[in-house]
Image (cartoon, rainbow, N blue to C red; front, top):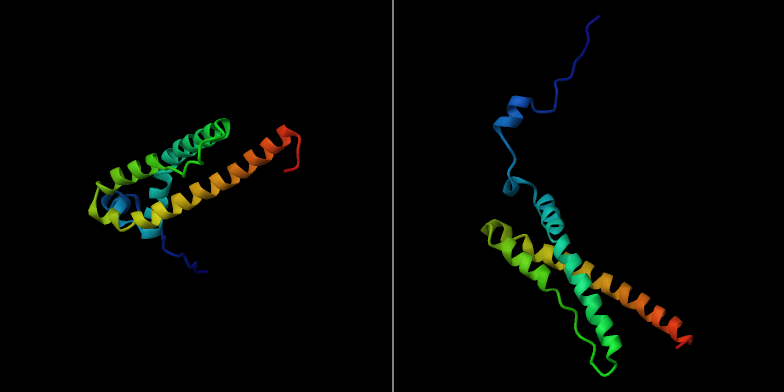
Length: 125
């Protein structure tokens, strides 16, 4: 009885070593996902910074509400942009995704802060 053995679809170890993947040869979707992950730390710093600004706005009632500010996200994106001109094509999409996530997080946090403030005042509005 003859066995049908399928050839391995995985590259051999020597093939894998001879042709390493480089960031720029990865599919665009994967590159953008990696770039988005590289903005996570900046995203967290900007989120914390804006939460503190909102807290200050609430403590000093006379101040106008400050706009959202994302200096770390933009600074990191500019640094990434300087790595290679090919990466520049991916950045507008990545920055937009990061800022949409950032704004969404701030909206949710502001909502929960408003509810907490209302409960602390003991009122319903």
